[in-house]
Image 1 (cartoon, rainbow, N blue to C red):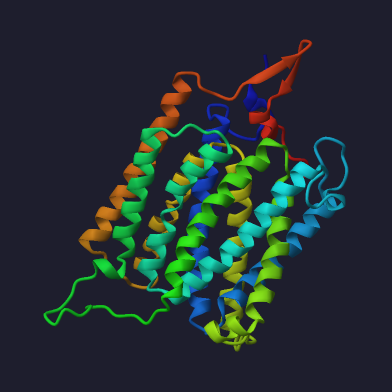
Image 2 (image 1 turned 180 degrees about the vertical axis):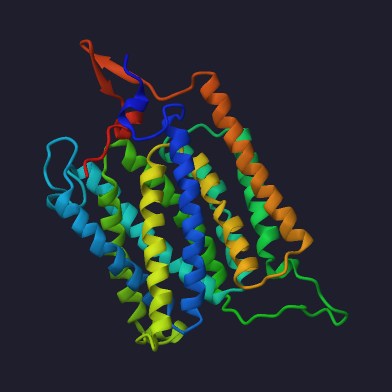
Length: 361
């Protein structure tokens, strides 16, 4: 029987799932670079909904071009003819992914602006834990104690790195050494965003199992990202929370937006493509490495001084990632790999490996 690796442009010694986890690690690095540009763009005073809109327009332009060229694996039709999938089942998953992802991005961008950075990142870092339980309910993925330990380690590490306000030292008058203005609504949006982030991972994995193309997932996000950013940003509530949209004032501001959009679009493609290749729980744990990369940029670019707690937090996350890698190596040594079924002597791809055939670009 032909090896599964035959279908992929990847090293033969890598399994499909390991290949996906490596791509997720790369996407996490690129997302952290996007975060640097996002922070710089936010400091210009542009509302989070406006930044989401710019990002969706930029990414959507390239996605539409790709869909005008790329074809479906099965029948060779151009993707643009079926932008949300070929069947009603695919359309439900793709549309759900776009709606959840669009709302999730607005919640993320708003929470970063509304809360002290550490509080927002800490609450969002809970999503690998949530993903494991959602994957059990929606994908029937087993809940393994080892995965839960790794997910909790990532959450603890993220908390120590981010330095939420409840961990900040107090002075003799019992006041915070570091203070920051914030909107309490941000705590609700951050928690809700964590749940939506977990749901996105599960929906993408589900889409991969039924043969959805990556560009269809990206198209759905762009549509709903633009729609929700306009509805929320132009509403009275949106204007009261963040102010009205404004035109970028200088070339530097446009460069920040371009950096955010370009890095985010590449990272988003890798993210949507790679999560289809492996278990949702492990994918979410690997994705959480983005906070380590983000803190690295804080030190290099924004001259943040490392503390003992942040170094311990980095250690926690790195140990969790190493533990995840060891789990995969152990599974592969035991032969727990995707299987290819046969039908009358012909190889066919099972549901768990339907996306092993290359997407037609």
